Image (tube, rainbow, N blue to C red; front, side, top):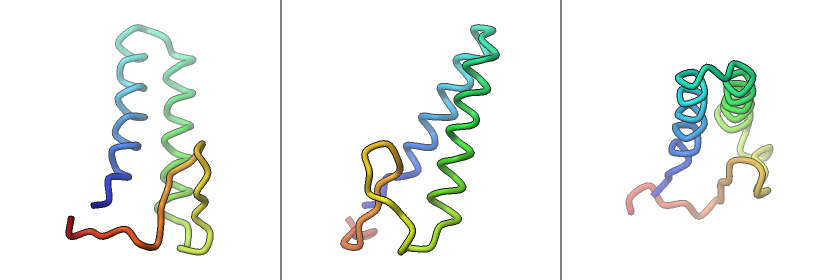
Length: 66
């Protein structure tokens, strides 16, 4: 089961929480992280996707049928 989209959802929720709190610097930071995540994960070719802990993870043996 591929659950990488939850990472993006968490980043966007972080931005919304910061927006509600009036912390515009945190909103900007969270949105930049979300944009970087999208650019990296969704626009990367399979060979470019890194498996580091600080970025989205993807392995070749992910089963979408789980």
